[in-house]
Image 1 (spheres, rainbow over the protein chains, first blue to last red):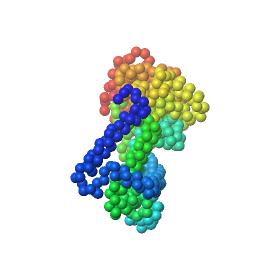
Image 2: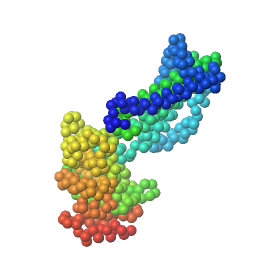
Image 3: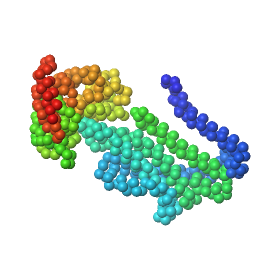
Image 4: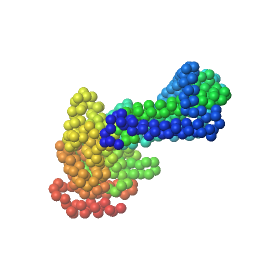
Length: 259
Length: 238
């Protein structure tokens, strides 16, 4: 690497290996589909997948499904991240509260969100609320845990220094606790975004009339493997996009951190 | 400008484990005292109690006649590991201390730069702590603590993590700043030579739970080998 590459050069430097790997996967995929090793109809080629994607875009189902899934994920993620973040700050800062709450979280955490789909359906029906809440719940637990950990690791000397410099509580929160926990908060949001996608799929498979995972299920029933590949591709890209976005925000916000 | 600090029957303990036996000490306004002792003798505990970070088990601490009930800007603290905010530049760290004064932004900036210049760090004002050496970071921490115009300066092994040369320089700087500001200084160290070089009085703490083993004035002038020997003797006695 050069001593000081341009921003575009740096971005290329970061993305270069990723693009290379994606290209290699595409080539392998193409060769495997062409080789005939897999029965035709079970493994569509990259071109067939792209055509299936274009078809669903033309028919309008892609936009409908993407819109429905994005709305659910976005709303559920926002709700879960806000509540989980607030709880993480509270329990991370107040050890007594943490001692009371940690056993409950330890019990709930190993239960996968998929296992809660039937219960969510029983309680909230098959409407949007059940899906939003399921996603929010999964994100909440993930974000809570990460933020709690980050806040409880804020050096006590930072908080002491702030107090002895006469900073009142609101300044200690916004000017010390929040930036000190920012790297953990960012990691929490990135992890939460990936959890949100998992919960989205679980929620849509549990009953929906639109959405990326709902479409996968429908295409599966008709053995439309090319459409399923297209759907999986979109889901994967969605996850990558969310992560890149949060990472970019993080680089601006947590500029002092080495990572 | 400076306050008298008194420990009145002060003892400190966490639960059943006492850290400091009941202790009476007076630190006159404007004095420079070293609290000397091995680790675990309660010297940092004394400092943290004066700072208001730790509550006494019995007795009390007063600063300028007022009982200490919590941390406050009248008692500045310099920590062993600097405790600078890594997300703020050197200037930003000093400005943090100035914020409570409600000054206009430009004035705050001006004062912060002046405080950094005073510790010889005018050039590093816009650098982040991670870009500064340990000695420079401790200079920033000193500037930050002094910018708040404290009347008592509490220092917990502030130079313990520095190399010998940087340490000597920082000691000279601290003496100079103290002579100029007249602040009451409590300086915790386990280094007998540092204590004798800096302070006008050395209080030796030791034992577990800790107590005062010796209390010596340090006359100005060249080092006194007899005094060093007598302090060292107290330091090694259990």
